[in-house]
Image 1: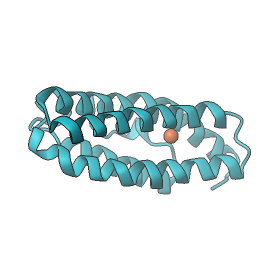
Image 2 (image 1 turned 30 degrees about the vertical axis):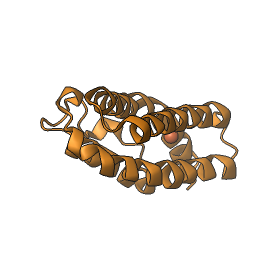
Image 3 (image 1 turned 180 degrees about the vertical axis):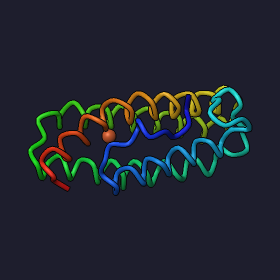
Length: 137
Ligand SMILES: [Fe+2]
């Protein structure tokens, strides 16, 4: 379920290549590809570093495209990004305070897994459709 497949492509290569990278990162957290339950707690620290960069660079790029082309779904799309960022920083604070507990490792894997399918598979694809229709990048 949480493995990259063609239906997840938004059709804009700069966005798709970063999405593929996110899938790869997610799957290297796991001992069994696609299964958030198989998260390896020792892999969590680098994933946190990866996500820190990702939320700035990748969300920033999508938001720039949206603003540049007056995307009508901008506010909602950005709100989803902001919810992910809030969740991520809460979890990071918890890990800073308590270390990587199995529960925190599980939560980060589940949240990222849901994000891949729910946000990339739905919200980002809508954006991709808009950008492609207008041939805007
Ligand atoms: Fe997005």
